[in-house]
Image (cartoon, rainbow, N blue to C red; front, side):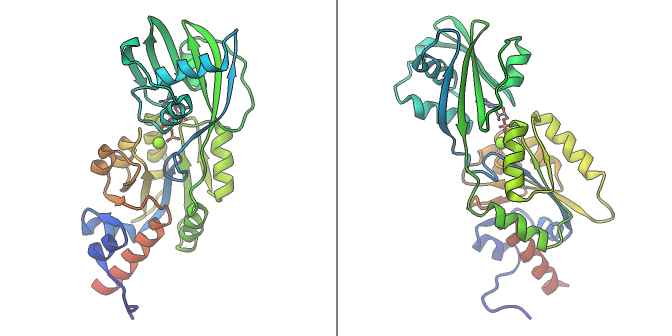
Length: 288
Ligand code: ADP
Ligand code: MG
């Protein structure tokens, strides 16, 4: 029997803040066995805060933060927003040239004619900047000025309130594997993944490597099984497009993600994934 107040189908989903772009996607949600999550902005709030500033080679903390803030001036990555917020001061755009955002790595830019790099260890390695690797929990933004290492800024994010519940609900709906794909470090990936009880954690991935991981997971599916990917759309639109059902967080997510996704979670809550699957199952029950 149908519970009182139950709204079925695509319309019912939309009343719960879940925008489904066609009944075929709702149908596909019935057979989901693999749920793959992006980390930042999807399982975590995507609101980073600077927790420490660690200069090297004679820089002051203020100088390190200033270089980082100038480098991040045009980026809308959550990391960039946190660094600009910590800097507080205004940024004169005339001092910035040749801005280049390198997906999954960070930023390369000229500030007052100096080449500034701001990003992860992968970016430093790619540009041959040597530095001492620290074992710190948190997302590290390394900075280099004209080829010399200038230190790192530690920023941290929080998991969303309903993320652990979201994973539990999926398990009770018979999902075979809950997986996290992240471009962030293994340290951060593992800390978040274990806290939430995810089955698999794949870290330090570039956007194209996230697509490759989806393809590998896809090969593990049998018969009608479906795989869904849940992302916030910052750097993950190719993955959203590749999954059987691509689900985007609508609040924080970029317009590109909302375009590329098959389902949009308007409230940004990961627990809405289980809600969508339940609606799909009840709708099938009514229709068939
Ligand atoms: P996630 O998979 O966690 O959503 P992304 O793919 O967006 O992460 O980014 C992966 C990593 O690339 C980040 O953890 C960060 O180290 C680095 N990165 C990306 N964009 C920036 C940026 N604007 N500034 C500094 N680092 C960045
Ligand atoms: Mg992301």
